[in-house]
Image (cartoon, rainbow, N blue to C red; front, side, top):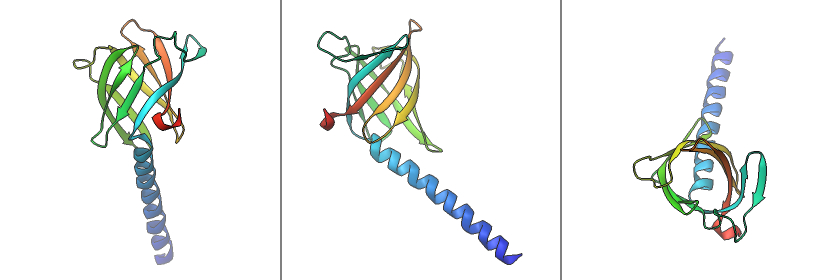
Length: 135
């Protein structure tokens, strides 16, 4: 019985440690400046070119849990957090010029962050950002 109890405690500790490591590594991945690479609207993905309204889009994530940047040449600000290995973003509707109803982070890796947001006119847009130094 004691062996099972000790084994259970070790497994619980390992799971907790891996969760904490995952959150820290996601945090390290996120905290930097990102520039837009591609956009998807209505199921069609577009690469960003000089004609795109998203050509100057960028985001900066800080260690204090905030983000700021431009999307469609409009300023956006908000907060971010990592819980149970998932990354969350919430736009500040009073400080942001670009009005966003909600944001869902779809993926975060070393090479990109992909998220979908819904604008005030209810259009869902997916943006794919890459680290600024990877352009």
